[in-house]
Image 1 (cartoon, rainbow, N blue to C red):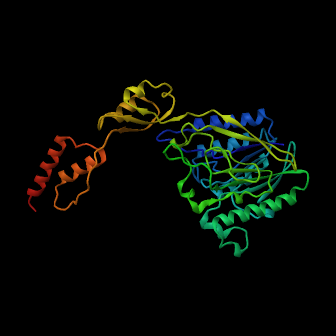
Image 2 (cartoon, rainbow, N blue to C red):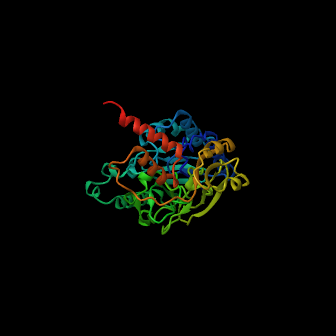
Image 3 (tube, rainbow, N blue to C red):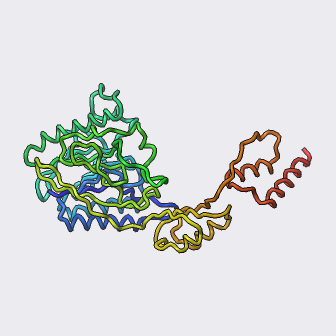
Length: 389
C-alpha cells in the first residue's frame, strides 16, 4: 500500500498585504498530480487545512476542492484531521457531506470505537487509521478518557491517548490491514524556529505546555503522520517511522528557503514502512536579502520573490520604504540597518516635549532628529506654555 502524507496547508494565510490564493491552488494541484502519478492508495492530512477556524468562502472552497481532488475521482480515501488553526466543529459538520466522496474529516478527539479509528478500504487493501486532532490544553478534561486521567500533564495525556489508539488499531487490523496514526501535536526536540524571523506556526500553541516527548509516538502504528511543525523532518527518538510532512508553502520569513515536500509511505501489513519524499516546488519563494541599496539592486532572482529587505545605510533614510516599494512588486518588509548610538535613559520629570522627543528619536533611530523638527517642537511647547488657561 502506498500512502501520501501532507499537512499544514494553512489556506487563507496572507504574507503581508499579498493574497496567496493562486499559490495555494498551484501547490495543492501539484500534490494531487503526485498522488495520481504515483498511484497512491490513501492520502492522510495531519491538520491545519485552513489558516482560520472559520475560513473565508474562497479559502473554504479551495481546501475542500483540494481534498476531493486528492481522492482521484473517489478511487482512494482521504483522511484529514483538525489542527490548532482549524475548527473541530466545522470539520465534524462538513464530514457528513464529504464522506460519500471518500473524504473523511475528523475534528473531535473520539474514543477508538466511537469514530476515533477509521477502517477504510483502499485499492490495495484495508487501512486502519487512528485520528488524533489537536488537543487544546484547556479541554483535556473533556475528551473520552476516565476522570482519573484528566489530572495528568498535557504530555501524559497525549501519550495515553496515542497508546489507546495504537492498541485498539492493532486489534482491529488483525493480520491483513495497515495501521496509521494521524496526529497534530508538538514533539520536543524538533526544529521549530529558523532564520531569526517569525514562522507560520502559532506561537500560542508552541510552548512547553504543548510539548510531548517521543513517548507520545507509540510502538504500534506502522507509520505516524504528524502535523503542526512546518519544517519537514522525521521525529527524533520515535520507535516507528514518524514524520512531520511540513507546510506546502513558505508561510513566513522564518521558513524562507525551506524545502517543501509530501511524504510517500510504502507499507504492507506487519512490515516496516519505507518512507521517501517528493519535493513540492510551487509557490512564490520568500527571501531575506541584506546589503547596501546598490548591492540589493544588483542581486538576481529578487523580482519574483516576497522580500524582507535589510538595507545597510549610514543613518535614517526616510524615502527608503517608498523607493523599495516602487522597485520591488512583492515587497513585504523593509528596514534600514545602521550603527546606533547608546542612549542612557533619563527621568522625564521637568523636561520639555522637544527634549523627550529628541531622546526617543535618538534611542530608536540611533541618530539625532532633524534640527528643524526639534525647533518646531520647541516653538509649539513655548506657545502652549504661554497660552491662557
